Image (cartoon, rainbow, N blue to C red; front, side):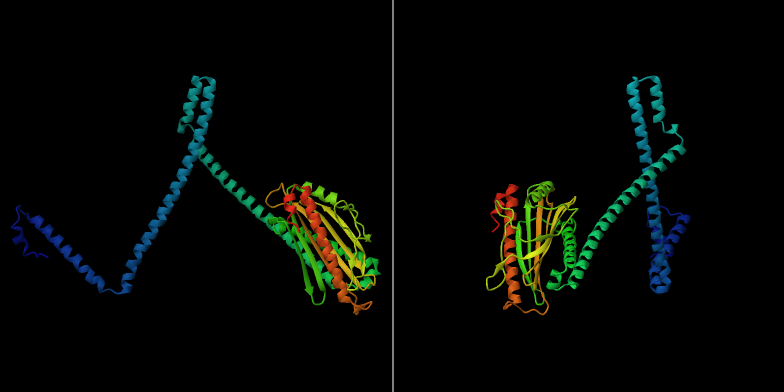
Length: 421
């Protein structure tokens, strides 16, 4: 930097005359520049605690500026919203008066009223403010109503799911109660009250199971239908074999047509007056026949006979489905083995289209042995039981195939009937 002693010598080389006041001003400027150059060295010698207040002040000022900007933007948006509402109301009024003007033929009075209306000073500021507040209140109310409707739909779906869960829980409780109250076949055969109670309990359990299946949210009705027929045997070391037959038949007809189809296939009593019937023969459905007696193989000695028992058939005509449930208990002639059957058939709307329907079938069969009995007429009781379960299951499987083919043919799907073997 130049010092004051060197200044006159350097200025003497300039092409203009430097006044005394200008020289003093230049001297002050040079001193200020020297002070600014010394400032970094001073700051470098300061501690972190001395520098902290100066570092936080810009942040605080920055936050303050951001808050002011947000408040300014909020007020600007509010003003723009109020201006838009005022312009919308003014446009509506102008359109109404323009329509009146066209209808009146452009009279002078209409022109004056239109001019007064277009003038924003014609209405008081208080009225405009009230209108703006009313519009804002309407907007908030509409949002509140939409939120209430959304919450109502959510609560309704939760309630429906809870009802389906309660039905499944009650079915499990009834199933456990029935399994815990197993009666000896001989005692059950000689006790009509216990026999009726066992069948009615089974009917209630089967009804709950069928209703849970046709539930459009959680049951099989929510899935895509498929032409199927499955036959499985589950082996329990204590209870013995349990056979289960499940089938699914998609139909190209409405639910009402499926109801009529089931009514034509089954001769059912009134659902309001169910009654127990002695079942001397088993029903099978073949072409041209409604009921046919068939025998059951009861052992390795090839002894065939019809099992006598009691069965109940019930029909439930409901809005979303048509249910046919059936339960029966048959007895070996010795009274040492009881055969318990239960089945449900449900017709419901198909998931892909409401103009189509699907019929689902579930059939189960198991047997109970008398306590302490090992042989019947020289043959082991397990062998007699297994032969009977196999014969009954095979005949029920064949009968179900006949039913499926008949339903497909009557609804115009002969092409699908060929897949059933």
